[in-house]
Length: 210
Image 1 (cartoon, rainbow, N blue to C red):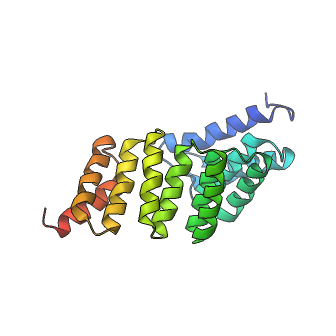
Image 2: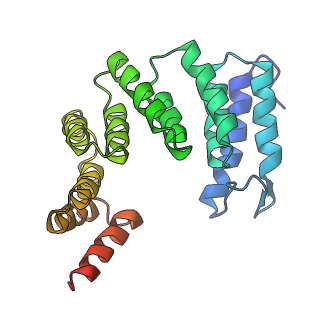
């Protein structure tokens, strides 16, 4: 029996289970189209969006819509949902981080920095926010501030392998390839399947004949 209109969470979780089952089966809804086996990604997304229209102030539904819009390369739509979430409750570090990622992708680094700095003031103990802010400082060329935020993020519990990767990027940008190689190796020790770290490492090692 289908959940009634007063049970939006159950309906949302059913739809998300169907969406996530695509990943488990090796498929993808990233393009927003059909994915084997027999999953109409557009239908699922439309159903979740209808829930958003019926329950426009429901945080879990807004977040689901934002994440799916982001995954399906619809940044403006994702941005709208995230802004609505932050208006409802600014104390959501993960939401601010995703909003910052969209701003970075759009090339709006000053906005991303301002947004993340504001949310660091609200949640200074969020390693997610500190990592994201470090990334923005790196992209802006401020390596000193990027290192500072990474140090704080690590002390707050950010995964060491991910911090090592970011430090590798900073050392590479600072013209220190040997140090970068060491950090990329540490990142791969902690997460052997991380393709981005492996690609950076192979590139630097190849350049240096290693």
